[in-house]
Amino acid sequence: MDKKTAWTKKDLLGLEYLSREEIELILYTAASFKEVTTRQIKKVPTLRGKTVVNLFYEPSTRTRTSFELAAKRLSADVINIEIETSSVKKGETLIDTGRNIEALKIDIIVVRHNCSGAPNILSRAVKARVINAGDGWHEHPTQALLDMFTLKSKLGRIEGLNVSIIGDIAHSRVARSNIWGLTKLGAKVTVCAPPVLIPVGIENMGVRVTSDIDEALGDADAINVLRMQFERDGLTAFPSKLEYFKQYGITNDRLKKCKKDIVVMHPGPINRGIEMSSEVADGKNSVILEQVTNGIAVRMAALYLVAYAKEAAK
Ligand code: CP
Image (cartoon, rainbow, N blue to C red; front, side, top):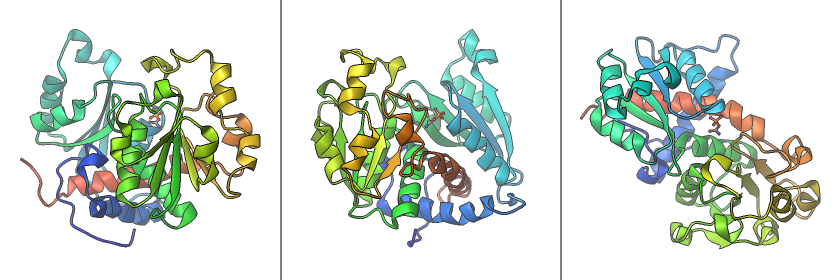
């Protein structure tokens, strides 16, 4: 959050596509918007006259709500499209939906989609800015940015930290975005899961790979514990939820063997008693609700930067 560079990207599609300086710029910008969210009147006129559309093809509590709040804190107008009652149900394609929304003179589309790459396709079809709010197994850039923002707030730095990402790596866009972001900022990343939940070739992303939970926890300054994605076949090759919890679940007994001030993160929603115990989720090392709060400032930064990108429309 120390460096400044110019933001030139029309869209925010993934951390794979950003430089270290661009990631640092988002975190730096988020730090100033965080101050706004603590004021009595939590509103600035930065996006007055702009319109943000939330287009979520998958369920969401945290991301959608915090994008809406972030846009409102910046004085933008916000439209939430309910997919269930939209013309998507009549077969309208993503591109047609995007072009028709754009014809209504909106400025930014925040899209969540079950298909990896959907935001990339949309961004090529419209002049409006596109922000990826999670696409399939691919990326969830603002989640990783808020995770890194929280880490930096708690531990003062990202560079040199040992961060272990534990759980359903195979289906996780959060894992991928965190790996891109953390490694670009100089953290040492370990991914830990049962072998069936580790994607082939993940080591090529510059991470240590292990199925040994003690190895993943041993030197960790922070852990990011992932949700088991039952809707995407998580755990189908594992004997049972109880067995998973016994082998990989984060408990107070496991935390006792870790660094005393280890930071415990989870992107939510938590499956309590599967990925971690309630004592850990609600315990003194947990920053899970701080992550949610920080999501507003990070998304304010993302909306602001793409809205006023120097190198804008195609
Ligand atoms: N972390 C996250 O993406 O949560 P939601 O699915 O509730 O948005």
